[in-house]
Image (tube, rainbow, N blue to C red):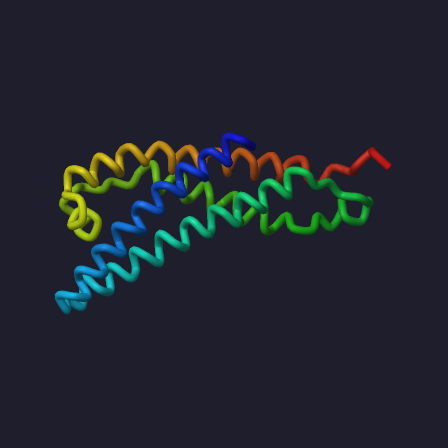
Length: 157
């Protein structure tokens, strides 16, 4: 659990840097009246914000769900919330696979590299890459534990 929280903190730092970089690029593009760069800047800001928001809400869900057990045999048969856990598990596996196999070249990242240079942004991305993989991997592990153990009948009463 603490590994997941520390991975989220690292992911927050990366997404914050991406967001600040996108806002700076967006501001520069708005001043130059380049419509394509403005749209790209807005999308980059929205992507960074939504990625961090999703990871934060998912962390709260995981922390809560790891502590839950079913209280009755009816809940054990119905398995409430199992479809959500299954969806999150598959989504995180998909994001993990995409993150592992994505290839970004410095020349393709124009919005972020315009702020700090192509090579500097490439180095920042490569340093943050293991943290994103680590967060998704930890999420997959925690969600699989929830999927496996949350629906066992509680013996404590």
